[in-house]
Amino acid sequence: MTSTDRTILGVLTPSSNTRLEPLTSALVADLPGVSAHFSRFRVVDVGLAAANQFDPAVILDAAELLADARVDSIVWSGTSGGWRGIADDLALCSAITERTGVPATTSTLALLEALRRSHARTLGLVTPYPPDMHDAVAATLAGQGLEVVSSAALAATESNWDLCLVEPEAIAAAVADVAAVRPDAITVFCTNLAAADRVAGWERDLGVPVLDSVALAVWHGLELAGYAGPAAQGWGSVFGLPGP
Image (cartoon, rainbow, N blue to C red):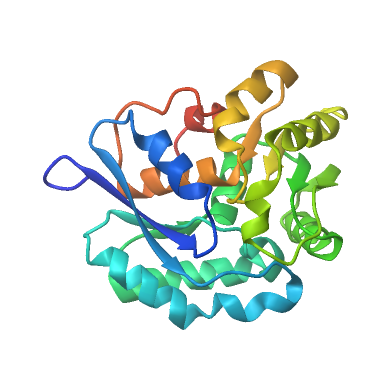
């Protein structure tokens, strides 16, 4: 928490993403003293061949702009660590903190932390990615000791912008499908989906924790920022998880 009793959350955003900013802003709107601020870098393509979009030098430049706002934490609200590997996210966060002095996390690292705290071992995976990318995410999670027991890939597109067009009803159907085998938790793994504001309803109807990438980024970012106010209400069980 800053000396002015504000919690200032810095969010790194894919340039073509149109979902995470309004969802993040809505999520923090009722949290006293919290505001979210965004810095973009260019991400326009989907696919394993598009790895050059995640050049650390470019991301660090965007992080430095957030640091100018004296943010209390910086979160990469993106899931590239899911197919590039957890080591990539860890290295990025370390570099951000070294450059700016600000603690950092990512949506993917936040997912792993939430699963650890909830003692989840089996997972339902929902992504909007093409099959090879979806499978890479599943393999990354398996490498962290998790068993992906059910999964659904919603789309095969090469445009990151197009992911925002996935209908909420299609996401809901995929979540229900992967819930059928009763995994310990389900993750909706992407920050450009209209999903975070629907999580609480899915959890109520299905009886399974649902971890959305946008909500995870906010949850972990607030914790790293030292936010000690009331938890977000109506955005899912992740905001009720115990502290580290």
